[in-house]
Amino acid sequence: MRLTTVDLFAGAGGLALGMELAGFKVRAAIEVDKWAAETFQVNFKESKVFTDSVSDFSDKQIAKLLTEKPLVIVGGPPCQGFSHSNIVNRDPRDPRNSLFREFLRWVSVLRPAFFLVENVAGLLATKTAEGRPVIDVIEEEIAAIGYCSDLKLLQAARFGVPQNRERLFILGAASQQLLTRFSWPRPASLEPISLWDAISDLPESGGEGYVSPPKNAYQDLMRSDHKGNAPSFHEPMRHTARIVERFKAIGFGEGEASVDVELKPKGRNGLQGKTYAQNSRRQRPDAPCSTIVASSHTNFIHPYFHRNFTVRELMRIQSFPDHFVMKGKRAVLSRSLCLKKGLLDDMHLDQRMQVGNAVPPLLAKAVAEQLRVACIGIGLRNAA
Image (tube, rainbow, N blue to C red):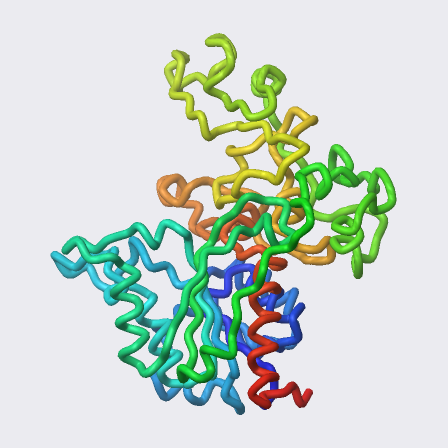
């Protein structure tokens, strides 16, 4: 059997890229967002990409999706705040009412040897409306389809990613024997990659070439296979003069809440607006970056330039290589504003959201390499 995988809730493809770096072939991906699906397809040209919801497929359609059963199914189903129904009294925090159950339906139909789920660390502290730990319900649901499971919190910064990002991984196996063949990856013993280690060869703005040859192993890895003398997707946001002055007043580790009153954001009425400590935080160059999230276009300031990070800088921080291409618009208005203004064509995940939602590929690779070892150990070798 070949080392093949199917990616559900695929997003831009961070988890899929990690699997491919470890030797797996992504045969199919399901992603409901149009722009994210386009990003996935352009970077994984040999994969079948379906711009649909996982719940749109019947069991029969799932069974006929591929000519061969995948060895592993991966994905990041949203376990909180999602429900298939608007029925009153349904608890959106209960994974039995969420897309997590749809993920397990695919596992139940395709019966892979392993499956891998990625989610936020906060899932471990989440409870249903009845007070039950969500993770207990998840483990029960996994056992109900005949799979064994194990889970692990992994810190991305300890696996070569220049970012403090803790994520929960849940591994499922078709039998206890298979589960015992898997070992979670051990963190690297080297010093974490700092933010400046990751991005110091990138120019101040788009259209300019790299400022130097790769300065370290991380930059060399990010630039390998990239054709061209300049980074792509590196166009900075255009800030007003007032915002630039505000950024200049923000030091390392500080945010917009730390600036003087005259520089704080103003509301629509011209009076002082609300300030948030988590907004416009200037990142320290000598440490891993804070967690990149979907709203990162307002969260962070470059350590030395008075602007937010570019899409390429965010991708570097997430460990996406420079040859990786993004589709969709760089940034769009919120979903509610798009609806209000009738911008229905913009109601998709923009590039920054796609990057922020992704699994760091190098973290995914570390887990995938252990999956590959487990597969080879039981004779499931790659025949490709």
